[in-house]
Length: 114
Length: 115
Image (cartoon, rainbow over all chains, first blue to last red; front, side, top):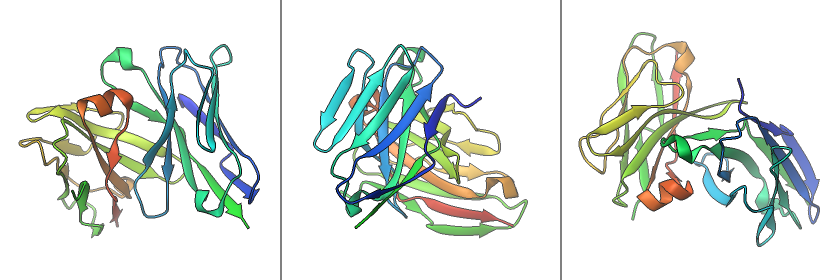
């Protein structure tokens, strides 16, 4: 059972456009939702994260929107740049379980074209 | 700081062979973990450790062993390699605070092919 569903699988956006990646979860015990960015040949790196008591978090051009009732959250990349081309993973954590395990979505490959 | 280092970068094994993937970190992090990444599957946790001498299983532990004798090192052993273990393996580490905020530092990965 896939606990975190991520879409789309791939995304092509023009430079300067808005990239939107969506994730949905089923386990209501999840209480922390990070996004990771991975460039080809590299390991993932934490990009931005949100807790469910906040509906939105913004860091520079990156914004997470969170809808607790719908059990959905999304990543918006404003003014997308070619350097943003990477694979993005959403994740979820149930910190109450004590194991702090990250459950990842399957990833979205973003290509920003000039 | 070198951060998280992994060796080797690439490895080809025959079915049934055993090997150890090495992971080391120089940030004095308590928490270390191993993930595998398969196309279209995201990252899946294999094993993790919350400190020297303490390890636990993740989502996909079968066929893998780990031990943590020092804070710095967290090797992953493949006991009898199978083609299903063909994957890219990532080691990650974090401080206690980092674990709670889920900022894990990932190594560059080991690409393993089992024929």
